[in-house]
Length: 536
Image (cartoon, rainbow, N blue to C red; front, side, top):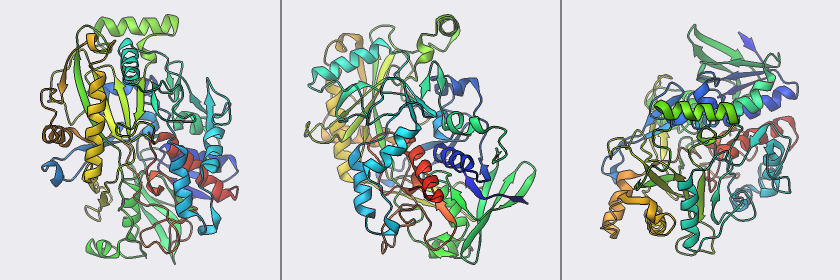
């Protein structure tokens, strides 16, 4: 039996940070990651994941329950199955959200739970401390941290033309989406540098390789938390050799917003009736476990190009050889691009108000597993529109008491009518950009949605047909104030009713941030370690 001071379950963005922080502070940490090593050439290079996203051992695919409000359609929610989690398989966009996201958490949590501070000022210290930005060093950005943050190493002309077209609609150019204001159009920063991904695995765990304080186990799938007398005392886990148990006075769950609630429920922590229905003992009746599932919904606008623009077939044949040689000889070219270079934050109905829509510009016909049969791949441009503060909420429930069974996931994307209205407004806004120069002359035609019928009925049907995850599930074991029956955690990320058990991944958030969730997940891991160490 393995003994440790702390067990971290899940080596994703949050888990890597929490485990590394605790190990550096002198704690003996066992880090259990159910997936594979992060060391692979296609994972290392910024665009490599696009060769694997539609089927790879480095991804696990949660297929949703049929969504009645989407006409019975089910869709996939891919998650990282690799050390580093999402940070090892994502498009590397570095986005924190906006200060109001965190100030709202703080307002909800303030005055209880030992006075934990979740304001923008508090979380900013974590963001800055982790960051090594290649352009900024100021009150909002850090330099010298383990996480490399860089400007895009290569920008395709389609991305530049799109940025200019959105400016022609009256949106300002934004040089820093993590700066004073989100609003506008511009180019993202990324967690990579000089053609190599800076994942949580590389940034935080790799420097501790060989350090006896950090015991990393790969392909180690946790089955349940061991709880005795109302206290977490260890974890039961399984690898190719069989089942094992490890004991520690502290267990931190960081398995992601779909698996962390599953592990809680398998451990007897969750809605009592649901646990009894699966023959599981009730250790702590917490009805909020698996509820409040939030995800950013995205819907694409797909166009074909009038010429050989963008990244179509750049990873094939002689083009791949040429691009490889350019990178090898000169350190330049498309290999430096993560495939998503430009983006925007807009409020179509009230431009000066906080943005309601985020957009990603992808210089290719981008078709993932759910949309592969929609049209043929060719030279094109895809713009995905994303509702940044969705109101829809979903659930994660147990399929059975078998730890190997995938959970039942129902995200309810666009179920709230307000989300659908915002998505439709975002679609209409960015469709206008395709009619503006310098983009208009480079676009052959918009294929989806059908530009000949943009009625409310037709556009709503397009959104329901095409909506999918933006890969940001969150909120399924959320923090909340004292007296909130649905709050699973207190403000210091401790599971209510169970001593020695915390959650530090995106499950913990009361509401989702406006933007990508990788950086916030790392911040959560850092904050959790600070709480454990008594530093916050």
